[in-house]
Length: 469
Image (cartoon, rainbow, N blue to C red; front, side, top):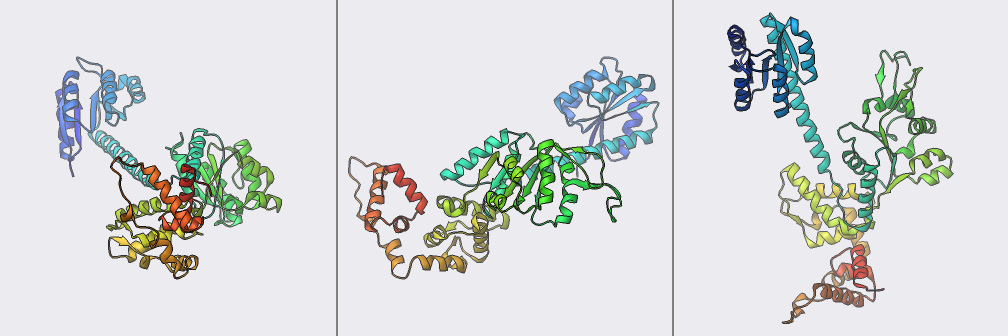
């Protein structure tokens, strides 16, 4: 491991010598400078991790040098050396970015501990910044994939809600549609992106513990409360609290959440004073909240407060044109994660995936591809690597005899002739769609199978080319 570089700047030879010797003995790499001009050059060329800087130099003011060094490298650690009579200057230096200061005459052991503490703090800050970048990259890699009209609307709403920072957001959609990804995406693209994102599954925490989890408790609030504990709203600070499956939240807790939304206030268990909440709330559910309101299982006033900025996620069966891009995305992710070399799917496997209804939505598709990649030894995933539910569903929709007709016996591309004057690809696509529809008497499902596309894609292209049923 490379040594930490330290620059000692002082006009007194004895101080430079004593500090340099001590630091070298401690395992640091050290250079010294007698003047401000020399310090400027060495700080530029030597690129130290830490500078011990005398505030009074013959040709420069240490305060000016401090600001100059920090402007060029804000991560540089600077410790001011000053006489006790200039203590006020040292305090001012802290305001300009100095990490600490030592007074003359100083004890070498005190200087050693100050330097060690400052470099340890720098190391921790660097590690923290690194892990934050890694975590952010991982979260950003968990992308929402889709280009169908419904997903484009979702992306537009995400952008609007990320910009409207103070608004509470409600995300609705079936299990596995990506509600948490949407919530994280909104957080990452908002001004709160550098603050915590804390998710709570309201269905997974017992009612007796949920309030304590969200709001915390005071010491002595209950038998085992031996000390004060902060809740999620307090820990989130100015970040985002994601209340997943809010439809399963007990009515009593719904009242308290309504208070947080309306007044930005809450109270710890056993507490006497209200605390202010700066966190943004994003809620999600896979249930029909209006029906729950009618049944008396969800508060109407809370629903109306949540239902201001609403994002509705479509099930995967309504966005079949996104299945192939999603599959390719998951293959790339798992290739990187598991060290695989899968290139894609066989045409037969694509047909099975496109025509399956995906009750578990994108999560089920993800698990299916992960399982197939673990089972498949080759470069391509075939039908033999898919699970029984997908295979059986396809057989039920396409009885023996019909499958071959719909997928293989449509028309041969070898029969097409390319005229010398050229041809419009759009016109070819339009004619092929019309041929497929005529071949199957207007049955869009079979025409889509014939053209190796999803039914939604076929409908989109029919609309594009002005083809009516």
